[in-house]
Image (cartoon, rainbow over all chains, first blue to last red; front, side, top):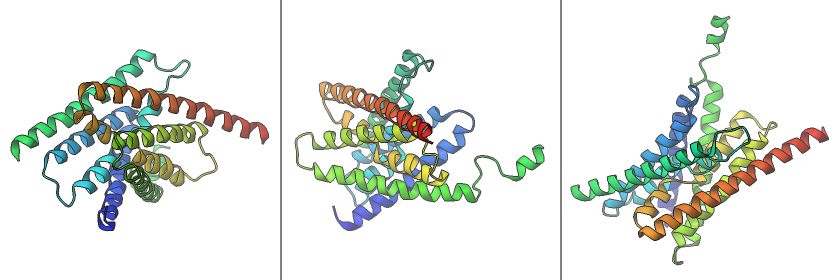
Length: 119
Length: 143
């Protein structure tokens, strides 16, 4: 990876983190932290699927490994999925994991299919 | 008293404190991205290298974030806490790469990879949480 591509990837990773933080800030005050993480993960999955369907261009890596990967997160989701005594019942945690997997993978697959038709 | 409260700005407004947090999130996000890309580059050319790199950062990041959240890092400023948790660990780990790996793998690989990622990731977050809680309790007991 060239230094230029690495620099752009890191810069877009920072931008993705800031967008995720802003989405989280605006929804967390209504107690909707889980929704915030679901939104960024599904949106980022769709975006990376669409980019992967395009012929490789200069910004492919900065957009996918930077913006999309920085916008989405797994660590926060994993912490939300930890079972606690007197916490959410396991079936609710299982449903949250299933929601991310089904909607995230579908969004990625769908965007890839749509962009493939178009290019 | 509601007037006095409103003068401090709503929780989501970009006050000076929020601006510092935002800058910390950007810096942490840059460092997290750099560390993740480093893991990707280190495993380029290896069979299932991309799968392994993403699995590794996601499991390590889940462990680290759970530790920080459970511990609470009370001695750090809110901006530094946000930079480490939302910025660094948030960007070090990724969900979009999981989705892309899943749609480009065959069904068996995809299901196996999701099971490994979520199984190990939640186990790591569970351990990180226990670890952070015990360190915090120990610190309180020592004080």
